[in-house]
Length: 68
Image (cartoon, rainbow, N blue to C red; front, top):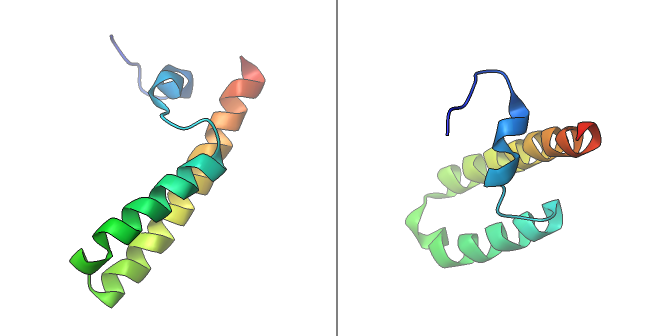
């Protein structure tokens, strides 16, 4: 499969989650399992990064669905 730079529709098939809520639930389960592997500062940074990435990518995915 060839992917072109700048075309976000090509990534639609890679989503493993049907909703932002489902993603958040899976992320919470993962965090419970791996929390001890991170320092307090790393956990704070990881949680902020995940929150930002989830909101940004979900916004893009919604745009893809809207334009499809």
